[in-house]
Image (cartoon, rainbow, N blue to C red):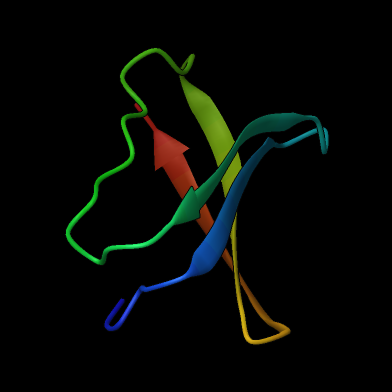
Length: 59
């Protein structure tokens, strides 16, 4: 995604449990999912009151 400045990032497991919540101020910052268990997750990105949801699989 481009221009990820001042955004809220939340990751949920497939059951809806919040796994990670971070505020990003720089688009070059990364999010480590190395400690996540294998499975399906939802990534929620909120910026300027607009929300985007993406599904990803950790293998």
